[in-house]
Amino acid sequence: MATAEPLVFNWGVISTGKIAGCFVRDALVDPKTRDVHDIVHKIVAVGSRDVQKAQEFIDREIPGDKSVKAYGSYGEVYTDPNVNAVYIGTPHTYHYENARDAIVAKKHVLCEKPVTSNAAELRSLLKLAKEHNVFFMEAMWTRFQPLVRELKKIAEAGELGEPVVLHADLSGDFDIENIPKTHRILDPHLGGGGLLDLGPYPLVWAIVALYEHPSNKSNRPSHISGSMLKTPLTGVDSSTSFTLTFSEADLHAQAVLSCSINIAPQVPGVTIRYRKGVIYVQPPIYCPTTFSVQYYDKAGTGKVVREEKREANYEGKGWHFQADEVARCVRVGKLESDLWGHDKSLLEMDIFDEVRRQGGYKFPEGVEKVA
Ligand SMILES: NC(=O)C1=CN([C@@H]2O[C@H](COP(=O)(O)OP(=O)(O)OC[C@H]3O[C@@H](n4cnc5c(N)ncnc54)[C@H](OP(=O)(O)O)[C@@H]3O)[C@@H](O)[C@H]2O)C=CC1
Ligand SMILES: O=C1OC[C@@H](O)[C@H](O)[C@H]1O
Image (tube, rainbow, N blue to C red):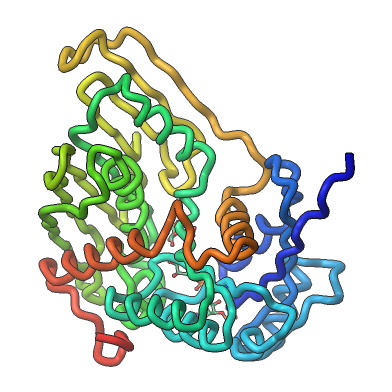
C-alpha cells in the first residue's frame, strides 16, 4: 500500500539567539525518530537585525543547505512567500510587535513564551489573528512533551483520586551579580526577572494538573495571590511565589508556584499530591525526563503500596513536538491548538499581570505596546 507523502512545513525564523538555535536544531531532527511520519519541517528563511548574523546562524545550524534565505530584517521573513509559519525567538517585550507584523503579513505564528508582556497585548494579537485567519500559538513546548501527556493520562485515570495540592518550582542560577544589567534576565526593558522568564513553567504544571482536570470544568482560579522579591541590581523580581486556588467547580485544589533566578533548581521540581497518591516530576520541569507515581493503600494514609516510574526516550531536546503541533493544526485549518489554546495563554498573562500588580513590578514606560 502506498504511503502518503509527508507535509513539508516551511518555517521562517525570527532572531538568531539561543532559543532560536534550539528550535531549529530540533525541527531538523528526522521526525521518524519520534514516530512522526506525516510532517517534515524545513527552515526556509532566517531573519536577524543583521544579515551577517542571519547567514552565520544558517551556516552554523543548517550547514549544507544553500537554499535557506538570510535576511537582514524580520519584515523580509514575514513577506517571503515560501514561509508557511514564523517562529519568534526574540526577548519577551518584542513578542507583541513581531507577532503583530507577522500576522498582518498573513503568516501563521509560533511565539516564544511568555507570549507577550501583558494580557492586553495578547488580547490584541488574538483579535488580529482571527481577523487575518491565521494560526497563533505560544511556544509552550512543555505541554507537548510525551512524558507530560503520559502523566496526564495517569493523573486522570481515577486511581489517584482528586488532586489537592501541587507544588512546582523552576529556578536557575543566572549569576546575576556578574552578568551585564542589559542581560534579558535582568533588564526590565526586556521583561527581565523570574516571573516572566521562568514562571510559565510552574504555571504550565498547574494548568495541566488542575485547570485541565475534568473536575475543574475549565474554571479559572477563584483566587490568585503573589509576592515578589526584587533585586536591587535592576528592580526586577529575583524570586516570585504565587498561589492559585481552584474552587469554582468540583475540584478543590491549590497550586503553590515559585521561581528564582539566583538559585539552583529544586528537586523534585513538581509534586502533585492526590487523595490516594502522589506524583513527583524531576527537573528540568520544562522538559521532564522522568517522573514517578506512588499509590497509597487508601485515601489519606500516605502508605505506599505501589510505585511506577516513566522515562522519556526520543532524539532531540524536546522543542520539535510543538512544531509538529503547529504543522498539523495549520494543515487542517485550525486557528489554535487543542492542547495549548488561546484560553491557556490568556490565563497565563492574566495571572502574570495580577502577580506583577500585587508584587509592584511595573515595566518601564513604553515597554507595554498595549496597556
Ligand atoms: N522555550 C524555551 O525553552 C526557551 C525560551 N526562551 C524564550 O525565548 C526568548 C529569547 O530568549 P533567548 O534566546 O535566551 O535570548 P537571546 O538573547 O539569546 O536571543 C534573543 C535574540 O532576539 C533578537 N533581538 C531582537 N531585539 C533584541 C533586543 N533588543 N535585545 C536583544 N536581542 C534582541 C536577537 O537576534 P538578532 O540580533 O538576530 O535579531 C537576539 O539574538 C525569550 O522570550 C525567552 O523567554 C528562552 C530560553 C529557552
Ligand atoms: O524558557 C526557559 O527555559 C529555560 C531557562 O533557562 C530559560 O531562561 C527560559 O527562558
